[in-house]
Image (cartoon, rainbow, N blue to C red; front, side, top):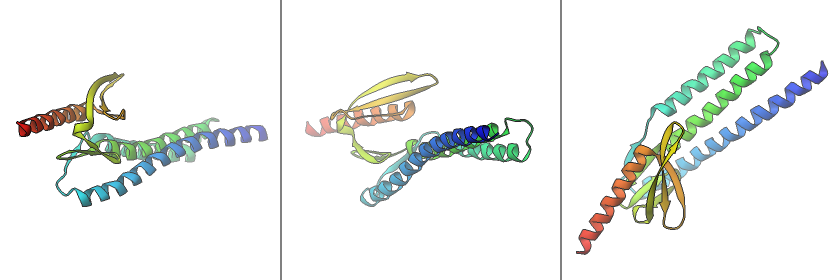
Length: 179
């Protein structure tokens, strides 16, 4: 009896601890984004906002709420001897969806200024964007943006196409100015 209790405690701590840590990292990214974005707004008053697929953030929030409700329901209605693991699974899924909601809120927003973009926590200049690689991953298509200094970041396909278009437009404007 005591052995089973220790196993449940250890397994529960490991899973809830790991999912809580990943969610903590997502919330910390969100807080960093908010601080740097407020600084960005003070300096750049003429930015335009691009939000790619708001539904993912909303769906993550709804699914986290559903998971927590299911965890509560399974907790108060014990129907089998695996109740602890079912409740823990719903709890961990809910925690993951909370982190995912914060993560998608940050990663699905981009703010355009004339010379570049503000994405996640920094400004990327169009003149430093060297190449746009199309990536096909399982269900979603992404674009990897390679910078001149070797840095790279990945964005959704729609945002990547828009970035490539803006970078080309910026370069053509610069060439026309020089002539």
